[in-house]
Image 1 (cartoon, one colour):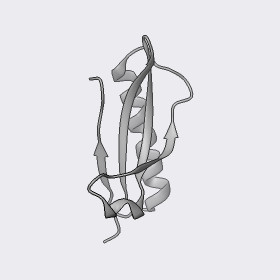
Image 2 (tube, helix red, strand yellow):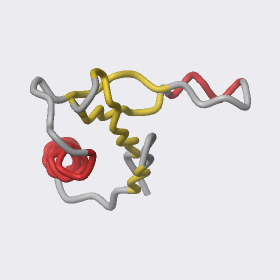
Image 3 (cartoon, one colour):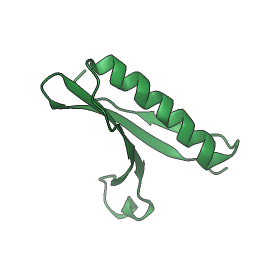
Image 4 (spheres, one colour):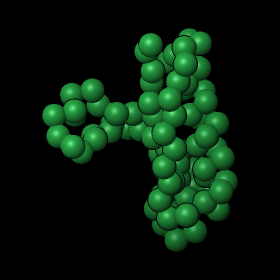
Length: 83
């Protein structure tokens, strides 16, 4: 079964300004024990709270999931920093 994994994180890039970042794993990174990710999408605007950024990032992840998988089962990895 084909699965697409995403990683969602929220960073406070400036004091009181939170941004969501959506990443996808790089396939050729399996040689090491460290997973490598590439940027898939990110927020253009900052959000006042971590929770707002996480909610908007989750919505973006669902959009990308639907666009990229066309109905296939998806494994979603949600990670967050600075909770």
